[in-house]
Length: 94
Image (cartoon, rainbow, N blue to C red):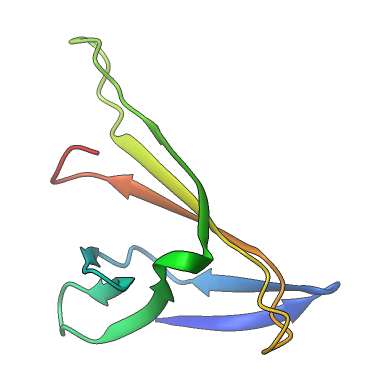
């Protein structure tokens, strides 16, 4: 359903089709969990998350969903570059 690909010095997550996920927040991390099977796809320590933003659609005639984005900071220890994640919030508001 998804795979990580290293292209031009950046990791990209390639998703085929729509993957419904749930974001779970606890005292230590944010987890991205596949809604269908409950598999944890990613887990990010809160200390590694930056630049959180949300676009909330409030116009009654607009059918677009809310959008949540966050950046996972560079991890020098694991040699992982920064990553940006986008989530379209279809069933729950941001």
